[in-house]
Length: 346
Image 1 (cartoon, one colour):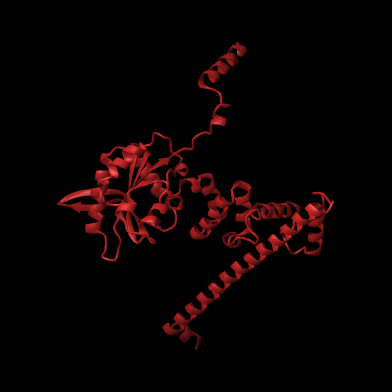
Image 2 (spheres, rainbow, N blue to C red):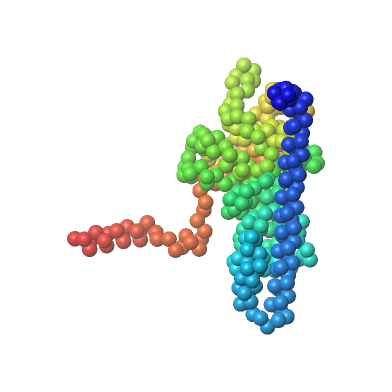
């Protein structure tokens, strides 16, 4: 009987359905538990803030409070002294604008919340990262990478002609999908790296590349072959975007942006629309990634092009902040120091 059921397609399909229901229930339960936990943390943070304001207990009472909670609830890990202080900080941060836990904030894990309030000082920005975490399914490590890469500042900054070449709401979604600049520090390449080298490393680190591109991108191939009028052409990188429902052509340029780059990309978009795109797909979008661009020149180059194209910079290495840069020794200083050491040896 058991063997018959194991090999029975109808039973197997029914079992898959039940397993899916159980997994969905587990997910809902986990989300519900997380939401309830954060509501509890909100109430505790509120109570601490009220007591500190109205009583003469001072900030030291939090240590005693945390100790007492751990004694009463030893099975709960969230009542360490450090975490109780974090709960208070989290409540004070969001309660400046909200009476209850913001919906997006309540939907992400506490570890993500702690990371956000430790790194972000503006509520609008913190809410943005909460929404982005939900939309992209970021782990805590991925969230930290995106904060380090200034995701909030870069999202939607690409120079494009989307408003003119795409219908609403696709144009808005496409604009929000692009960033400027893209951070490729994970490649470990120097700024003088060549296009082929960058392309090769991007495909080697495809998971990191997809995270940097954002939600919805599916990798189709590199040096994607198209044949136009008996001639062979090779597209640097081809993707499909699951939300935009279109192919995305990415062209890499290791140097400074030139207006003729958009002409070549426009040609590739026409080729993909004619030879690859299906009837149900939306028009193919092009992304030109270059090391540096002049904003006015880029805008002029897109003015009379009727295919949707975005132009963004990419960074292979992070720029050193000015305040740190001024503290670093110059080449001349290092040479003088080495010279002095050599003299002392003599």
